[in-house]
Image (cartoon, rainbow, N blue to C red; front, side):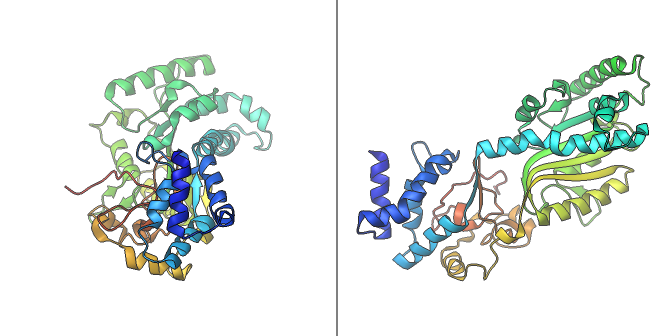
Length: 370
């Protein structure tokens, strides 16, 4: 009954007069909603996509505006489901991280890197794999999925957070030393009994600015920037966890734009170079630039954005992007929604909520001005 009422509301908002109109325009949306959109985790209890869509469309004054908005949703919206994201998480190690470690091990052991089986069974690779620590940068890192999908990794080397207590650091070192003794057939040296690679995991980046950037005073900012700083702070637990000779810092994002990939690669390389670290950015699924919405890409949708935008969602945090939120943080221009939340780099009209704006996909904001 609730679904029927939502369908009737959508038909009323869109001015559909016959069942044929709903079959042509509404039924495909109903099907994709059942398959994907209804699983959006930030809908209020009892809310589903068709109902949210009808209410979102209702904020536009004319039928032509509503048709423009509906066409945008049908033709441009990209929704990443939980199943799709979990798939990206599960292949991140075997398809991206492991080949990097195999190549490094082959070079160090004198084996040809295309002799994958020989390299994989070598003592050098087994030690390298164990000396790799996986740390989540947020709850979007899905370390539980990564761990279950890759049973060859030890539970102890996959951690949900990059912020580790001194007690946890000591446990990690003890477990690493014990496992390396089995691999080497002897007690590892103090230098060997330290992690050689750190893999920082997260789900998505559109601009790269929230991960690593440099402040005007030269200090590092962003989650990754602060992490790199903590590695060289003797008062921090992390100081004694990693090797001080050629540490490899590997940033893995399950999804990212090409712009973010370039910015992250450049900034990470610069900050790692001055610290004597090697850097690598690995993107499991790239979001192509062709899918970005810039001003002029869809002129009729630009008019909706301009006429219905409200700056109430802007804050000191969003100001770091250098733009308003019409086209998202830092002008990201993404028509993208993730099943657990809407990125703030996506078009503001899709997620921003205020006294003047109703969101299609309500967003939970992490950083708010008080």
